[in-house]
Image (cartoon, rainbow, N blue to C red; front, top):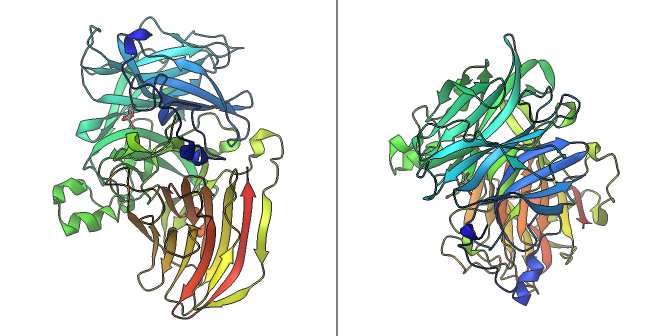
Length: 527
Ligand code: FRU
């Protein structure tokens, strides 16, 4: 293990960074994390493996950390699952439950968990300079892992072939394992099939298309019914891109289409720019085209989102890394650095005749078999009118996350603002606005608190948002260093990190330019 001790030791925690530790988002206890890996539900537990530096709080020594949860909110961290060594770093990948024991690693009665990860080979390896796909398996329900002696199981002699997501495919020609991975620098998703997880045959490739100005990473492919109709199944291909996302730096896009066991074909309406936006250069047309692509999240801080395998009842739950490679190593926290987003249940719904993803945060999970402690109400209101005035909402509560739910009929108001973690003089805060003229939801974190640790951190994000029956519906989850916004029932999602000053805890809602009707407003806490 000492062979990969090449990163900084965790700093001693400066007192002021303690308060940024999230209440309901996963962080490693005192180390660095990035992408969620090997998300799988097994024996009543959600397993979250993750890119982890066991020796420091910046990227390096990549290994798979491990945590489990019954409800996707309370996590227990376990020892490192798969550790880097002199020959390889353990990059991102997935875990499947090998029902049927196709790999021979377990038994039919006690199927093994099999991890398919990227071996990022180092100088000491005979494969040095390449990235290839390898296996590790666990026969004790994910607690300990053994690498397969036949690794790697799939190589293309490429330096950027990585991030395998494997799933069980059942089609007219029977069942097999399918892998989606990337040729990151060619902006391609590559697909392979296997009977036993050990030997893989090439199927097809997809891309470049839409956002392709950076490397393509961490893909996922899964089926979902449109509006719950079992006769109308579409496939969703998630492709993370870094840099070149809509808010700058890293972000996640998706395509909707059809997968026949060999090839993914995107519906024409999910491909805004068939050849990819990079062909348009650094132009206004490219920037406009980027906003036509389908984004999982319009904020700065949601990357590498992939889904859990094996979740019962056909539910599809994704989770992302709440950070951006633009400044990831510089976040002002110690000894931990970086957290995951909330788990989000995704569904497909028809929007103007096209299937689109909606996401809802998982704040109470039926699979957990237990009731979560109910969120504590801080405030609920009946309908009222807000006219050129500001309403003070309950303050942020240290130790808890806050959930603000609102249904607003903007009427003749030109805009209204939520000011979160605000100062009493009104000069500081994170501003979430809806602008009725431009029909944009805007998040401005330039005065959110500590923004000075990296030049690319102060920012303003926006997402196009169409009112439905004139109404804006918002669910805002505010934790100690993040804001996640789920608007219009999860059709528009926006996630940003923030690092507010301790003394700034005031929350306000205001309307400008005319009266707005607040149909519903509630604020509750969860810890
Ligand atoms: C995405 C990524 C992956 C890679 C991992 C390395 O954030 O770059 O492509 O497997 O991180 O930590």
